[in-house]
Length: 137
Length: 137
Image 1 (tube, rainbow over the protein chains, first blue to last red):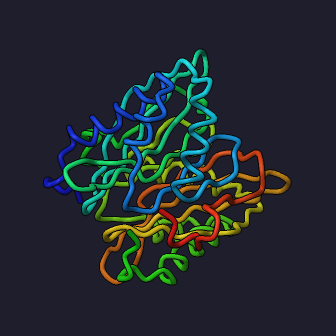
Image 2: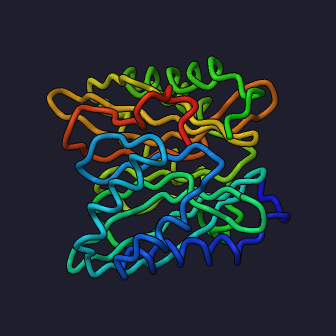
């Protein structure tokens, strides 16, 4: 069920901060985006599984040394008990990917615990008819 | 931080049940795997974003009508406050994918809230040196 206690706007802001750091190639900002007190993992398309903060940040150091022109669209927040998942599309040039971004609260902020992205075939989001995306279940 | 209250064995069993239903093309079993009281989403490789239980199960009905020979390996559980993420590799013929599988407790069982899979380049899991995967952060 949707937990009304989850501040969706704050989660979306954390998701925005992730893509802002990504697009800017800003490693320090990307470091602030990622969780420090929770387990982290990252599944970049075409990469092996990355587990642990050091490995995840090393992967971002490599990626952000030559950042792509990336933007995201159609972010949808799915909320759980003290955790939020954002699914959205990433647009990199003519490529479209779908992404899973998991956020956890750490103190007053929401920080990223997991990211996966993968090339998508269609630029659509398909939802159950007649239900707003935040409430689907 | 790792929450010792999360029963890792039960989460892994739920992950096993997901891949068993996948490999068997068993839609009824797949239906039991997925959450009923929490928001669900699914990002199949090359597909649009699927939000909501009806859409997610319709996608599985299509996929399971001609199930691939799939197995999974190297499942790692990352635990949060009343939620668990399993990352693993999927092996389908000669293809290797990485997968994110999110599980939530519903009553006495752990059920899938989100799945994403994507072709991987390397058949490795890379972790922070000297730390067991369950405790990385």
